[in-house]
Length: 274
Image 1 (cartoon, rainbow, N blue to C red):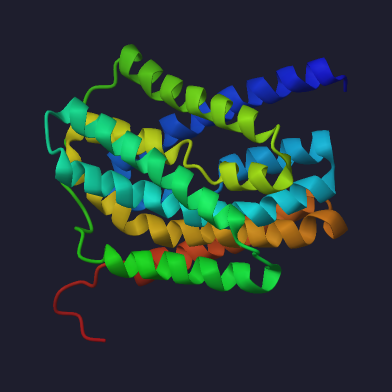
Image 2 (image 1 turned 45 degrees about the horizontal axis):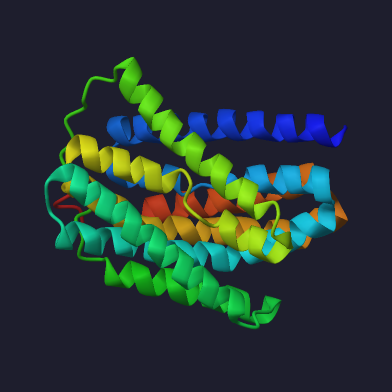
């Protein structure tokens, strides 16, 4: 594959995958509720796209190293959601101003935290305990947020659907294009940016109000840890097992983890003894 055709294929894949994910996730949140929708949003998305195309264009070793650095990139994603929550508290309205403040403060949080994590001498022995501490600590911090929210589904016009897809596509193309030029370390860190999660949250906030995003933020740290597991498996297995086997195994581990989280977090029925 020539460099020109490879770039075109990559661009098309980014557009199709990002638009499909953001439309699918917002539909899932509207149909299944913010809690389950957030778990779906926290499945590996950009990680998979980056892993595939970095392998094809730069080789398995580059892609494996990038997957390793996506783990601290996911840790840097946590301040995006915390920053968004703080912005909603600081700027409760009008709604459009609140959304803009949330996106701006969340993005700033990612820039600062990813820069800090990129400066640390992280190794395979320290990266996983870091992910555990960040995700578990954040889950504890947001444990008092509501577990669900009332959501009256708004009609989905072509303009709304195009806006949803366009916001995600623009973010994905911009972020991944920059990441592709930075080498495996910073490519992995930038790949942690929630290119679909942040637009989904902003869209839901704008359409339904701030209460809808609180369950989304509450469950996200648990889902983010699943993406860390995905990238850990991928970084270890990609070179010895190949791309298809590594993705299959990594997805298997992440899905098993998300099923466990979903069952453990399921509300107990009243009157049922343990």
